[in-house]
Structure formats: C-alpha cells, structure tokens
Length: 184
Ligand code: APR
Image 1: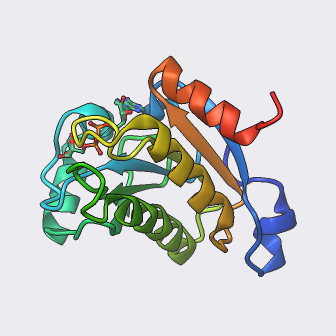
Image 2: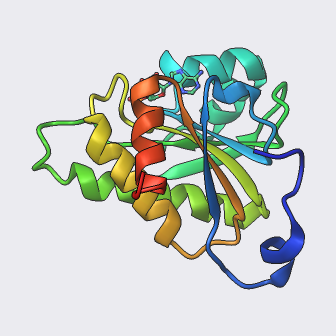
C-alpha cells in the first residue's frame, strides 16, 4: 500500500503490465490507495461485512451514489467516488454466492476480479486495495477463493501497478502469503 500514486514505471509506461501484489491484514477502509474495493450485492444496496465498514467510513453519499447506479450483475463491478474515505474511488464488486462449487462460482469469482481491474483501468487508478470477495456472507471457501484472487489479479493485463490484498482474518492473510511466496 502506498500514498497516492505508485512508482511511475508501470503507471507511466502506457502499456499494461504485471502488478505488484502485497498483503495487508486489517481494515480496508484504512488503506491509502487510489481505489478501495468493497464486496457488494447485485442491488448495490449496502450491507454488513466489508460493505458495512466501507459505507460507514465513506458516509451516506456513497449509498446515494450506488443506489443511483442501481444494479450490478454477479461477476461485475461498478465505480463511484469514495466521499469520506482517503481513497478517490470505491469499486463495488459483486462476487458469487457459494452454492457448492458446481454452479460456475469459481469462474464468476475470477470474472469479478477481472471487472475490478477493468473499472480501475477506466479511471486510471494505479493502486487498489481488494478484500477477499465472497468469503464472508456469500460463503465461498477461503482457500480456493484466495487462489482465484491471486491468479486472476496477477495474470490479467492491467495498468494497475500496486494491488493490496486485504485479509481481515489471519487464515486469509496466511493463504495469501503462501500463494505469493510458494517456497516458504
Ligand atoms: N476490511 C477488510 N475486509 C473485511 C472487512 C474490513 N473492514 N470486514 C469484513 N471483511 C472481510 C470478511 O472477513 C471476508 O473475508 O471481507 C470478506 C468478504 O466478506 P463479506 O463482506 O461478507 O462479503 P461477501 O462474502 O462477498 O458477501 C457480500 O454481504 O455485506 C453484504 O452487501 C454485501 O450482500 C453482500 C454480501
């Protein structure tokens, strides 16, 4: 995580590259990045979990802005200003509800992470912080979810240079760290 824009090499080059992934354990609303991501529902109606924390920190205008957009399909993401948060934008990403794993949930979760990068690229956000989408209320098992997050975010071409994987619990932080440093 960094203040403002990241080192200019990837951000200024004008070509899509490979972002640097780091792990932060804690509250995503404290991340000083261009855009923070929240785990939203299709109605963009606000909720508990990370969405509750993001809306509480951003203030009521965030709910007005997401209600004005009104809907986002599973696998998609929309972007709004961040209002009271230290970041410039909030990306509202809709992950799948876990239904046992054979209803396309892994593909939908990968699509959600690709949509996050697409929204960031549209506004020129070069540093983003991303929670473990779908692993709370939506029940996606943490291990495959972490694997999909790391694989998709590191393999999708993007102008984003710095991605902070935010883990709220020690298990998720450990999963991310093992995936990023497979030899340890
Ligand atoms: N910062 C970072 N991560 C957080 C925070 C926080 N402040 N609070 C919770 N988390 C973590 C959870 O521990 C979990 O690992 O975010 C992850 C996603 O959990 P949820 O917020 O429950 O999101 P999800 O499983 O995608 O369910 C989305 O929940 O709140 C509603 O409106 C939301 O209906 C939608 C659904």
